[in-house]
Image 1 (cartoon, one colour):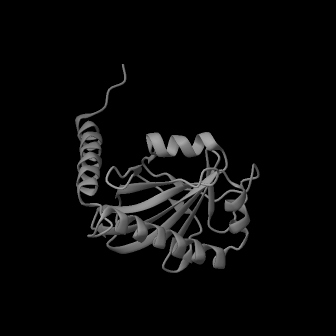
Image 2 (tube, rainbow, N blue to C red; image 1 turned 30 degrees about the horizontal axis):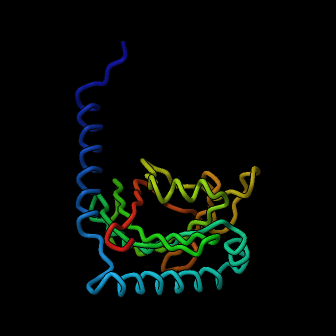
Length: 197
């Protein structure tokens, strides 16, 4: 019979409780600012265009990749690390290239680890299959634990600057210093914004 010791069990329950509490806190405070829903949607689309412009300057080949894909998503996130826990929230939009429809979404992230400071980043998802995009929109995604994605090129596993691939989705993460060498997605959840859709 395999049982966990009391300290390990407490640690697992504490970590799970911390993740749930932080997700609830983030979902309660994620916002694109004040204004009407139409104004908020315009702010999200403006952010999307700015992020794509920056990404295309850093990695021009992504423009053709997005144009050929069924759709893509762009998110902006402010990540604040305080001692051992980091809590953050953000917002974004998924664009279906086939229909032109925009789906507005929120994101929340919590991670446990050493560090203090502020880390602002933007993230772009390129959906290579329609069903991957629909799963993302309808079910949201939760990246758990230490899901730091090592950058990969096809099946070879060779590093490509700032690119990670999951479930027919290529992910790019931009930070203040440029394109990140790997996408950090630990403990991140994405869900539809009911007030903007």
